[in-house]
Length: 496
Image (cartoon, rainbow, N blue to C red):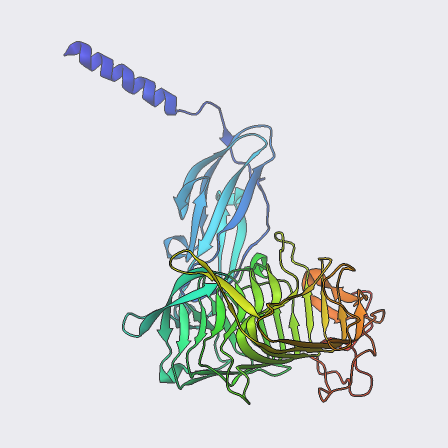
């Protein structure tokens, strides 16, 4: 027994010894350096956790140091959460930093808007104490919002199919008092908010809608969407990650899905960005009523498509669709399409893009439950592009894919198109093309920033056909000398 105790004591001594520091430190001398003077956590919504932010703390001395204390000024009542060198908490003691080395501090927070007196929530990180104490402010703007969550008592499941991929999605039907969105507070949607049959969702000017991951908006059979933005107060749809680094990240949310059986939908003065498919439109609609009328709208940075139309009827004017992982505009399974004074420009650089900026076909192929590939041909009643720019970073940015057993009508006039010389399209075919500027220079302002305004060197200037659309997307008159695309040309300022 004595020998056993001796062995255990020896093992304990070895373990304790192995846990001791293998270096000597001196007390912190108040000369820490920080990667940021202030940690600004971007705007967050009430009761929703922020993104994780990083602060790096440097010891520039030639000796290892010990920081006696790192804490939040507001202590345990602080809404901020810390992780210091791998340890979670709000108060830390005896934190070592090797000579000419550094440690990481990770910062998050969650704040209830109703628990604070001002939307600007602040605290301070305190390093050491007394006359050696150093401080780093923490700052977050908290925004109140309407939250729409899935509900067990008022929900359904639907299957969303895009390019043969089926996704089961949870839908929550909007109640009667949720069918008007206003600009008083933003809306944050989890899951798919669904407009019930025979109901209309009206979204007033200036409203901001934020979608969580795998979330979106569904307009169900016989339901309608009315987006009533104005030039000065646009309606915005985007993901709910508000940090600056997510401002152009695609695929943060799902889609605005207009389902089969819905018609008479209107979108005016909207910005739709950073989703998977900006707007997905099914159903041919009624004879004299398009499924979707979309005007003065910008759609950017979608991981699949800006607009995907499937055997549907879309009328568009002053429409801008920018970068998308597959195509800015895809119209498949036939349909009826009119695009006037619209700009389609795809300079996607996040991955290899296989499709052109604009892609039109009169059929759809899919794999059935028996893993058999089937093709259904539908009539392309018409696909008209008048005064449009179709541009991008591929050699050919307009492709028509036709099955001979279906109707395929199209007409393109007074448009600037990016196309290779060996493209299958015959731009000299006057039955389908008129006044085409092939590979002309649109002179966009800044494609990296989705700024597709055209400058004074653009070949699109004064080349448009006169129409009844007298103002461009920026409300600039084009009545006398219209330019091709959604924008009238401007003179770029050197400091812009």
